[in-house]
Each structure stands twice: as C-alpha cells, then as structure tokens.
Image (cartoon, rainbow, N blue to C red; front, side):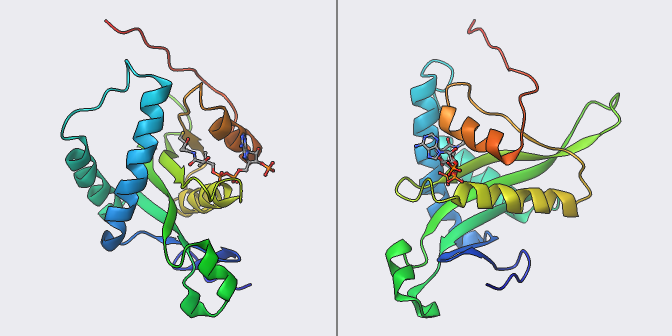
Length: 183
Ligand SMILES: CC(C)(COP(=O)(O)OP(=O)(O)OC[C@H]1O[C@@H](n2cnc3c(N)ncnc32)[C@H](O)[C@@H]1OP(=O)(O)O)[C@@H](O)C(=O)NCCC(=O)NCCS
C-alpha cells in the first residue's frame, strides 16, 4: 500500500482520503444535511435551523476549503477505474465522508495558544464501522501537526454515544461539558 502524503492517501483498500475540491461541495453538503438531521433529533429545541441554512453552510464550506488555516478532507470510495473490481462495491468514486478542520485560538492565558479543531466529521450510513471515521481523524490530526499544533480538539454531543466511542478510542479525552439553558 502506498502512502503519498495528504494529496492522495490510500489508507485502506478502496478508500482514499484527500483534500476536498470545490467540485465535491454538492456531495459534502448532502452528507452534512444528514448530520444536521441527526443533531436535530438529539436536541430538537436547541438545533432548529434557519430556513436558508444550506446556503449559509455552502458559503462557510467554500471558505473552509479555500482557507489558509482551515481544511476539508474527504473520504472517497476508490473508482473502479483503478482496477480492483471489489472497490466498485464500495461506491465507485462516491464521497462517503468528510472532516472539516480549522486552527482555533485558545484564550491567551494558556501556554498552548491554538489547537487543531474539528468542526465536523461525517461518514455515510452503510460505510460506518469500517474505520473510515478514524482514518479521517488521523489525517486531520496529521494536518494539525503539520500546522505546528500541539493540541487537537472537538465538541461532541453528549447523546452521540457512537461518535464519543470513536473519539475516546482515538485518544481524545473529556475536558469540559458545554451546558445550555434555553431562554
Ligand atoms: C461518528 C462517525 C463519524 C464514526 O465513523 P465510523 O467510520 O463509523 O467510525 P470507525 O469505524 O472509525 O469507528 C470505529 C469505532 O466506533 C465504534 N463503533 C462502531 N460501530 C458502532 C456502533 N454501531 N455503535 C457504537 N459504536 C460503534 C467502535 O468503538 C469502533 O471501534 P472498533 O471497530 O475497534 O470496535 C460516524 O458514525 C458518523 O458519521 N456518524 C454520524 C455523524 C456524527 O455523529 N458525527 C460526529 C459529530 S460530533
């Protein structure tokens, strides 16, 4: 198995993790809509979205793809054109997951001033449990390290036990719990 760096990493048979292109946006947006639907189910009151939420996200996604201190990586099911007929069954070039990251500032009183922060992580249903989420996290961490970060963080819904399992296994630990009260 070859490893050619962030440009096109073949990390597991049939799946390539690579930097997102603007042409991937419709697929990423489709996947993100499923993520939003899940968040809504977890907390219907706190996670009602605006009517124009997709357009707002589209602008944000473009900014994150183009950004200097942000990135979006996609997991792409390798195309059958690459030769392995079994790969076709994986989805034939389909965008089956993504991770969005940015460098986030931490209040300047701490020794560690910035961290590599995961804005979102998603793997399509039907492709879950195959370590694709973990692969995306690994590549995200590697991006943060290359940016000189010494800390990697994210927020997880307390009801999202599956994602929390993945994060704990990955080596992330609970630090704070965000608490809210609707007014
Ligand atoms: C969370 C998510 C990204 C994980 O991706 P994934 O590719 O399924 O995760 P992985 O296969 O890398 O994770 C493996 C670990 O997940 C856990 N896991 C796998 N299937 C699980 C299940 N059905 N229920 C609970 N935990 C499960 C196991 O601990 C597993 O480790 P193991 O294989 O060593 O036993 C994916 O489930 C997802 O997109 N969920 C919906 C969106 C979401 O919740 N995103 C996170 C927002 S914070």
